[in-house]
Image (cartoon, rainbow, N blue to C red; front, side, top):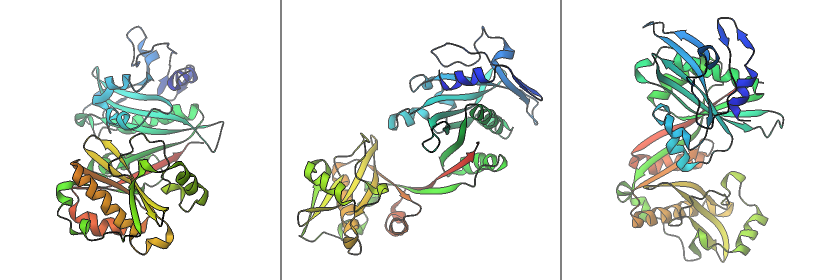
Length: 352
């Protein structure tokens, strides 16, 4: 049974104060938003009146969502789910709540329900998108969307819900105040996000100033041998967060590189093509004895040079907020050439 089909069942006999929540279970393969053959009282989960313009807003469940049929709701998603599905696969059940005013959809929240590794009998949820049309903002619609979603998640034995987002004017003015009002944990910065262009990097002198000594050999990561892979895994000289071994199919073969010293693999830079015109620099690591020598930075510049030669125009990176060395590096070398700077933040609310 799908995420929000379960929610329909759980709420079928529930009523609370001013909002009567009467939901009917449905067996429909397309996304369901208040079908015409369902009585209004069965489709609606609540209603409010705008405090400024007096417009009535009705809230309804959206169920039977998939990666494919989410496209029908794309104009009401932020960040774009269409772009998300180009990068990520669906991992759990999708569901959401839509706000309707004067017969038009004016707001939507979509979440993904996932198993909770720390509590096998429970779940956790990630909010993938929250959007309110510009003309209906500052009316409390976003707050209501999150409240109704949270109510459903609690009934589904969801122990926590998380949201991740890029810090910008829209999220800082629209999302973060709602999170604060609804007692979410204070947002924390997870990554510093930078973007630049190869045209800008061509002007950066540091790209060409740090060649590797002859004892070091750079090689395409896809040429790593089975024996070398086993040796790296046996030695475990790297933290899990900097592992070069992932299942991400977007590995960029042009400039994902390994670094050998006297025949031993001692470092790597692993990069991904996150968009047709963009390479993301995902992981950079060299073993401890070589870190003070700047070998990691030299390897990074080699990757940058190969991107410049390839003509792929945009370079992006996300540096973990607790990686002080890389933050300092990004601030010193990348910031002067950045065309975009932001933070990736996240917030969590415990429901259990």
